[in-house]
Image (cartoon, rainbow, N blue to C red; front, top):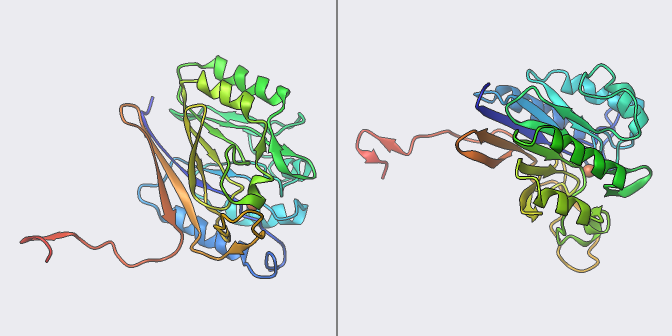
Length: 276
Ligand SMILES: [Fe+2]
């Protein structure tokens, strides 16, 4: 078995149809094309890409068809969980050919066992609502999956952030009632990272002793406004993705990569040593 693993995490694609801009400002499809091209140029390539929800803006079949035209150009396997902007039936229809997606069931939960780190996708969505929850059924499903292979490292994927971000309007729609998940994680030493999206910013927090990373959006970001009752605004800062690198003897490190073209790389050193 391979003892190294790298995944790229992207999130909150919010794809619309026919060139429409999200919130009349953001070319989410163009941004996704830039993102996927950048992933395909990474050297070495990641082993897989995970998408932590909000593939589409309104959960429409046509939006899923659009997003697939871009995702299918990925040269590595990809896996996705739904977000609050997705719709489970349309999500299932659009991804019906994916072996990791169970064709039936209320929730879109899955596991991937193809890598040295097990991926567990947990559906935190509540239909028609922006916030998330992990009900008793989903918590029991997750515990059963963890009990199956207690010694294999796990990366757990959620859409909703299971922490307080400090951005009020997002925290009114975070993952609610996290006590059960917190207790489960505290007794799950095999979970090496918890990943989420939804907040459209790179944030790091903890839950049940685990580091939780939220990915930036692939297009627009939520404005970093910590004022109480601050407005629900977005900004078009540089978009980004996360790379999570795991090694059997080294553990996991999580990296932030902005999307786009930048100058470099250039050397620190030349034949005289550190360049002055
Ligand atoms: Fe989103």
